[in-house]
Figure 1 (tube, rainbow, N blue to C red):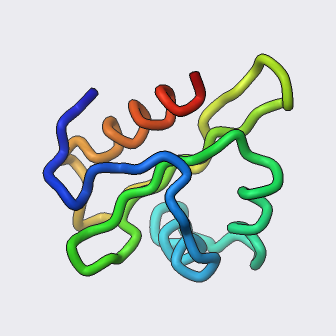
Figure 2 (tube, rainbow, N blue to C red):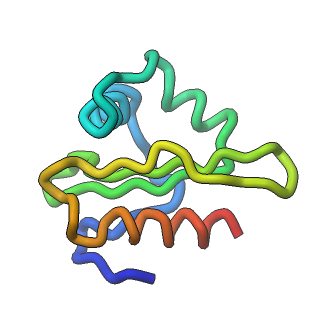
Length: 101
């Protein structure tokens, strides 16, 4: 797994609040998803990986969607602009893959 300096090490199924997740995805993709995303994750996702900076701000996220059986895939891989190109996205994917196993 890619090493990323603490406290930015991504965590599997780390708690995320709806507002902060929507803000991160809005920055990454140019539009915020509908409210209630965090609750939908808890109900419908196999899991997710999330990373926070030293202040506790959510700076990275990836969702592991699944079919309830043998198939899973990544959605919404996002890292805030200030933390891009430093390996955080790769670390998020590695944590998500390990968690999905």
